[in-house]
Amino acid sequence: MMDLILEPPTGVDPLRLGMTFDAAMAAVLPWGEPRVIGGTASRPRRRAMGSFDGVGYTAFFDEHGHLDAAELWWPGEGRATSTRVLFDGHDVFTGPADEILQEMRRRGWTVSDADAESLVVPGVSLGFTRQTSQEVPRDAAGLPVSFTSVLVAGTGYYDFLAAG
Image (cartoon, rainbow, N blue to C red):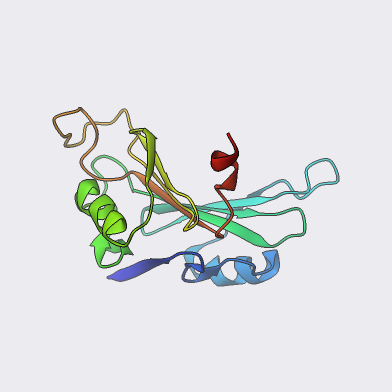
């Protein structure tokens, strides 16, 4: 079993925010060769996508080639993994989303929940989704009980939300 621990605003080991593209590619190489999109003159921002033990990931790089966000995806309906994605001891993809949200609010963090399927924690720069068309356990409001993806980024990543 492997644990991928979310550490906002640092990243999720082995992906550390601010690391160079080459360092990030070396860090995820044990997980297999990722697919890289971008990195051209017309599209300088790159992203690398892959999976590890069924958990999908996307690493987002800024125009200077530094990691500015990492997103992890649950394996999907009917797929098992021995890898856990943890936030403060809570398994993001199997634990109740409401418990994770309560923990964040207990810390005094603001959870922007205007869209119940896509929640963000500005300042801390965590983003969670509960979007899926797959058959999963759902709560009384029809939302998946657990999150289906999580993004960890630098502290200013969601600042644009406050401007609107």
